[in-house]
Image (cartoon, rainbow, N blue to C red; front, side, top):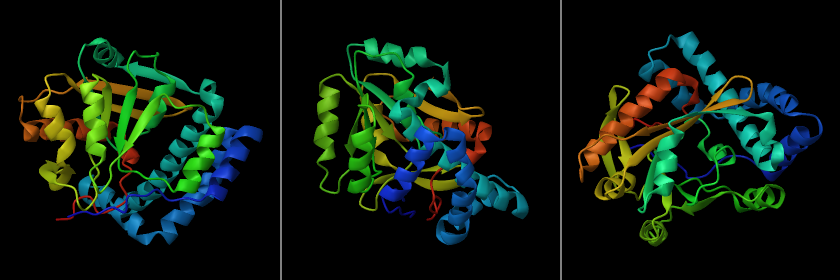
Length: 288
């Protein structure tokens, strides 16, 4: 089964350099540095590069040369999404444009007298969505396995705007379940990332991009049992600092987690057909 370390890469110094460049020289200069940063990761993180190469070669059917080029471009685009997230959090949201596709579904969830469920993935840049949406009556609580190193987290918190989302970190002692239940009981809005899990997590299996893969069971078991609409939500990066939000109602059989997972994998396949470079899971996702 695919395994993942549960941490993001990077150092406080690296973040400081990019934030200095973004604020004092410009976002485009920071993008320019990515040429070298992407090369570094391409050559010096062979395990990650091999995994993303196999995604393009085996799951997308690209040639060897196109797969290698796409792997490098994937690192570059991922770097751009990180710079964008930092820039937008640091007060430069006005430098970006945004397009809404299905935002009315999210607004309806925010108005409903029930819990609202969103399911996203490690594609695109969902975390920036909060800075382009209208203020909702309900705050979005993002459930994630992604634990940044504490030093990085503290540094970013010291310079960035107060986030409009709360984060619930999945923990081995399962204490996050109480936080999730509290949001649901309070009829809040909660967003799961349905494509990543830690080794101790229970999983469901479904065919994704032509091969069986494992997914965390929790988001789909919880969401399929609540009598509230479930939305698949993605925020994808496009050219010229433009982001495109997609929100789609999930069609599935009530209390059938497998049916919901099947709808989710179909929605991810559709979004990745449009944005094949924005798949950001750097491990062997389809390992048995």
